[in-house]
Image 1 (tube, rainbow, N blue to C red):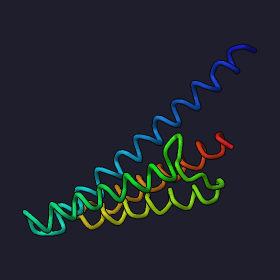
Image 2 (tube, one colour):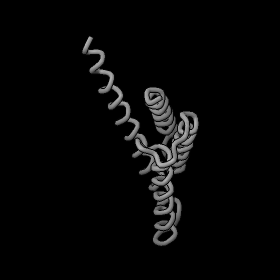
Image 3 (cartoon, rainbow, N blue to C red):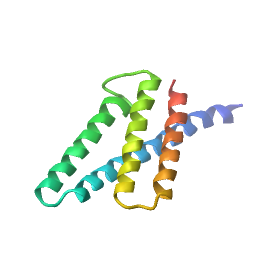
Image 4 (cartoon, rainbow, N blue to C red):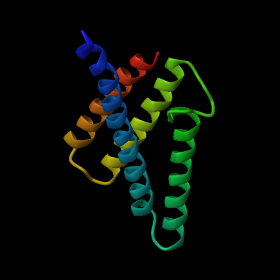
Amino acid sequence: MSETTASGPARAQILQLLRSLCHLIALIVITWWALAEWSLPWPGLLAGAGFFTLTVLIWALFLSPRPVLRTDRFGQAFIELLLIAGTVGAMLGLGLAWPIPVVFGVVAAALGFVAGAQRA
């Protein structure tokens, strides 16, 4: 019986780690897209820094383990889906083949759903 109770927190930590990895990938992809979309040096650097700051701000306000603005499960899921959709759009904008963004979007949404259901 202790095996099932010990695997519960470990499973939740693994899911949260994978969810955090998806959020980190989202941050990197959105920033890379902003740098690549505008010409360097100044418009590209300003856009990259701006999108990086905006993505980190949205993550810290709503999606971090200790969010500044607490919302219900549905609000948090909506914000996470917007972040995932932005990442998928950025991946497509960077010219990746469409199966890669689709797989990332489905995996990230599923991880967010499962991790969000375990938190509540």
